[in-house]
Image (cartoon, rainbow, N blue to C red; front, side, top):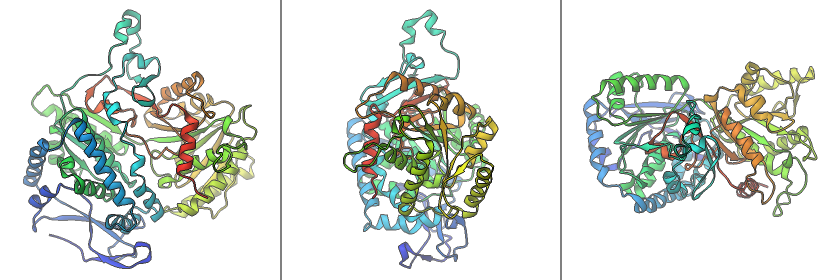
Amino acid sequence: MRRDAPHKFEPDGCAMSIPPIEGFWLPQQVHSNLLTPETEFEERTFANGQPASAQAPGAVTARWPRLNGAQWATLLEALERNRSRPPQGGDFWRRFQAALHHAGRRLANPSDALHQKAIQTLPGYTGYSPAMIRLALRALDLFSLEQLPAALSFVPTWQAMERWQPMPGIPGRARFYPQQPWREIYGWSPILARQPIYKRSAPSQLVIGYGAGNVPGAALLIALLTQAVSLAIATPVIVVRNSRHEPIFSSLVLQAMEEADPDLVCTTALLVWDFEDQALQKDLLSRADLVIAAASDETIADLRGQFDAARRSRPATGQASRFHAHGHKVSFSAIGAEMLTRTEGDPDSGKSKMEIAARLAALDSILWDQNGCLSARVHFVEEGAEGDVDAEAYADCLLDQLRLLSTWLPLGGWQPRRLHERFDRYKNLERAGLAKVFSDYDDEFLVILDRRPLEADAFRQQVNDCQGRVIVVRPVAHRMDIPRRYLRMIPKENLQSLSVAIGEPGQALEDGFLQFAAECGACGVTAIRTVGRGAFPQLAYSWDGWIPRDLIGERPPGYFCTIEFDQPYEQILSTYRLMAIN
């Protein structure tokens, strides 16, 4: 068994020596029977989020096994045998929630050994600050599962193509945007329009997942969603390719869940293997009924080609095979004119509506240092008649909130040089009277107000530059300008979520907001959340246009957009109180 020499870690300043951490996860019984002293391991070492030698200060090494063909066959057979163990229906749901809560308690407890292992390893390996990792460890409960049973039983009809449909038992609405022009069904059969979009599908036997990037949790999200189908059907075998850039977090969560209830996760494996291993890829993809790929657009295109080729090569079984792609995406925030006011928005804290909106929108942008697809890049600010201040006052308030949040969630391993380059570029625009820079050179973020009219290429470049806590505040005369003028300039397949600060206390979803949401959805937005929740998607709603029903049913090509609330202001206030920082 190959292993580098142990090296030193410093959890919050305390030196200690520990061996490489396991960057994979297998059910304990499978782990014991599959891996032997002769098993070879691959290792990767990172320090401050960058490749490094094991002797570098703060270096963290993760390892995973290199399985040969016989071991892969043994693994899949063992996971298949385990499929009789997980409970189903209500029993599964009760036990699943209990196990996840157990994992959340362990990871959130600073005195727990699992929490300490995460803090010792994740900051160095990923480059995110220890405070950011602590937030992630405390945030498992924010990924609410209570609504998943209702989500899996939600059966949208073709009317969701024309109007927002309520989701029984879940706040919010759903709307479907088909890839093909299906509107003619209304011309000849109103009855057909009320029929379900989904048709019956044979249950998946094997799900293959791919989780890329260094934002913790992509592989975990795939595993949890796929395990949750046990509410409705038998649990499939689940094999997820973990990311070499962050193989630790998901493995720790599954370790804690297995400790609480091993039957729940006994059909799941998290491993790392080479995309270039054509024989292994062909074998796995030819067996898979469902592939869930969260990766770059280039990797997804390659995987889709491999999947299609593998599917053509296997014998006809009548079993449908599906490919769920989660590629490169960008997200935004929208601040309504009704929030541009210094009137009190929270009786408990006395903070104004604008302070509340700016605090939560700032949080949406700085979580994971703006590297994730869910991080808001541009803040669209509606300078309408309802507000008593303008976008410049909002940018100034945003600056104050970012300075406060940055003391609590400092910037991680992002290169300051890249932030400074953007600062200098926008300062040159400011000298020409084309933009205004609010932050200082040495701030761990950049805030710019930009009123320039931009063509599509220039706007897309500006959006791509918003990484590493670079935030552009862009005023709009009316919120409908957001989809009609700006979102339409982003390729539909690259839009993800919109975090909104819109609405009045006690106000439900009004027709004007639903029309705004519908036009955002038509541009490609797949999830509309309130500010502060951008980085914490709820599993019951759309993930890049796929809803939980897609795990157990088939439908024509297209995508869903979901609204994740009924009363936006009440949810905003609830989130603010949850995230309140003095």
